[in-house]
Length: 261
Image (cartoon, rainbow, N blue to C red; front, side, top):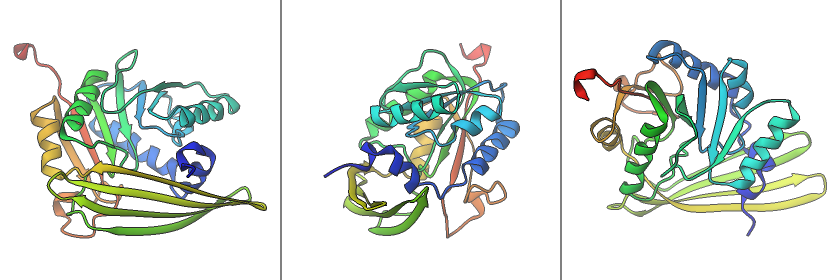
C-alpha cells in the first residue's frame, strides 16, 4: 500500500487547513516575549514539507529543516527553489541528530515528536540541547498527551488546485504500560479522473505532561516557560480543566552560569 509520506504534494494538501501565517506569528510572539537571546537562525524538527518556510524567512530568520524522509525533504527543497527561497535541509532522525551550527530557536509541529521508547525521548532532548543555544526557545505543538489514551477517530477533507484529499485519522491503544498506541492515517485522493488510496500506520509512545517536564527540565538543561491551549497565550493550561485542543509548549534552554561550570 502506498504511503502518504511518499506523496508530499497530497500530504501538503491534506494538512492545508492550518493557518501557517498565524502560527508563525504566534512563534514570533513567543520569541519576542520569552527568548533570552537574539534570534537569527531557526530549526524545524520533523519539518516534512516545511509549510512555515516562507513565513519564517519573511520574519528575517534563516531556516533549516530536519526530517527523516528524503522524499519530503526533496519536495520542500524543490518548493523553496521554485519560489527563490534559500533554506537548508538535513536528513536525520529526531531521536538522535545534530546540525552543522547551533541554532537560536527550534520548533516541532502537529505532534510530530515520534518516539517509541523512553530512551528515544531522552535522546531527543539531548539532541535538542546539543543544537540549541543557551537562552533559546524550543516551541512544541501538540506533543504532549494531556489526557489518558483512548481509541479515537477523526476525518476531514481539503481541496486545492482541483485536487481533493479526504483524510481519516485514528488512534488505537495497544499497551498501556508501555504507553504505546497505533496511529493510522488514510487518504483518498481525487485529481481529475485519477483516484489514489494512501495509508500510513506506525506505533508511537504517548508522552504525558509531568514526565515531559521531568525529562526536559530535570534530566536536561531546559526550563518550562509555559503551556497554553489552542495556540492562545490567553489560555494557560494550568487554568484549563477540560477541552484541551492543540496545546503549545514553550521550553527555554537554561543559561549556563559561570559558577555552574
